[in-house]
Image (cartoon, rainbow over all chains, first blue to last red; front, top):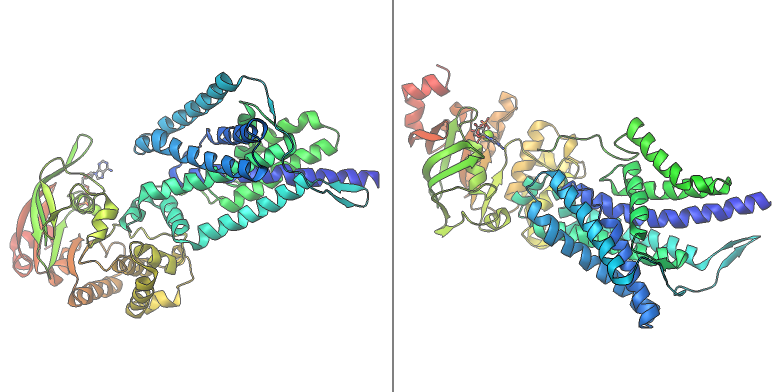
Length: 295
Length: 233
Ligand SMILES: Nc1ncnc2c1ncn2[C@@H]1O[C@H](COP(=O)(O)OP(=O)(O)OP(=O)(O)O)[C@@H](O)[C@H]1O
Ligand SMILES: [Mg+2]
């Protein structure tokens, strides 16, 4: 029984961290789908979102709801601004220039925040508090419930947006054939901005959910989180949104099960082992389409 | 209606279009014919705003369009069916049509979609299928239906007969004639000179980026030089 209840808690842990990876992985996949960029600055957007929550709760004492909204608004704006300022001018440059620019932005954000706020972690007071649920001898924390429920809602919302709305369809059209999409009268700038806005808004939500379980923000927090979410996106098939969702949960679950087996020091190693195996065995990922030649 | 005046288009060092001047008048079918690499697609892509000319100007309905982005050109009433159809293979037939009407309201699109379906009953049967599952001929119909969704004044078609069986080529050209009869002005790019000249009012013959002949389509169809170079006689 004790074993089962440990396993159960680890599954919940896996779903909770998997939710966060999935939300972040969606941002990588959407951006890759539309402009073929591995946006290495994406993880740092989460870091910025986390600092916004810290500032507004710990420093200004805002209501949690206000801090959450602020974090989402700031992350979204930051993502859109980065695209406009740094990536849009390189739209017809080689993809490598774009990739290097993204890495540069990532360094800029990490070092900038370190300069302003110091390298140490900032403790964020508990801001998402509520009752936990007891099932037999196992307990599901309030933050786990919120994280999983919010993530599922976000995924449903995003799926609706991408499948059914005009802008969502334009996004799919641009990812499939940018030139043909322009001939339909689709405005590329608007559509690409919209994609960055969606991806960064999800990163903002992820930053809040991350803080609800880990409770601290640091300048480099985005890099490991971002890297693992990137692995999730590759595992699911980069460019595929259902793939990113699945990949996130698989990575979260793999980490949790490794911990449950008492091997938590191997957590990170397992994630990167998964990356290597995917790249060797099925580079297009679980749900990715075989690479088609883009003209 | 469309006046192209002295355009020069380059790909890096490659001078693909060399001082081309031509026009399309309201109500005409005009065709540009020429061999592979003559510069036909380059000209259409420049008119639709995907490429830029180093010189000259392009005017449509008495306004300069050579500085506009593609979505603005389309909004003026000029749509292009690109070479190789370029339908969105992972989207359904109906979604492809919706994309064609992107600049129009949902109500206008609902009406246009049923127009397209009555013109192309095959598409109606396959409305929920993704375009990747259509045959080449059906994809060409979809590409044309998609371009019609924008209610263009002038439609540019880039090699609509490419890769289709003779019977389907006939069918596609019949559709072009119908569209024209319904009031759309047509600029048609073709390698199939025989077919193109037989439906066009006027034609321009291109060779390595230059216009080498122009005139009434019927006259070119009888011309010895054209017959030997483009009609394989
Ligand atoms: N993206 C490109 N980069 C470099 N050169 C190009 C590019 N596209 C076309 N060209 C060159 O420009 C010239 C004109 O090409 P274009 O595609 O306009 O010819 P076309 O008349 O449409 O030929 P086809 O009948 O084969 O479609 C060719 O010499 C071609 O090699
Ligand atoms: Mg061509």
